Length: 124
Image (cartoon, rainbow, N blue to C red; front, side, top):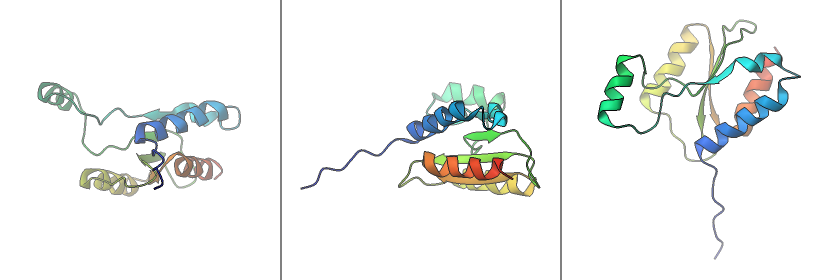
């Protein structure tokens, strides 16, 4: 029987995107504006209440590139692992809301897909 190769976690995929960003700053200086929004994760109930009070919003995408390109005001990326990741209703609504607000907003299944989205966006 074949043993399954472990799939990278969403966090590992996102870390690979950030490592790529750091390597590509010479080619795309705008990547210095690529940030992670620490909006997810498991928290205690009291911590969740505190964070909500200061603006944490369910569904906000993982990565944001604050760099206008073409018709877009910036780029939001919701990271998922390569296989099996699902958008929550809040994440899908956030992506749609950002599109309506003039941003490009994409889901990326894995680091390679996120990097391809970033490269295509930055070459506009």
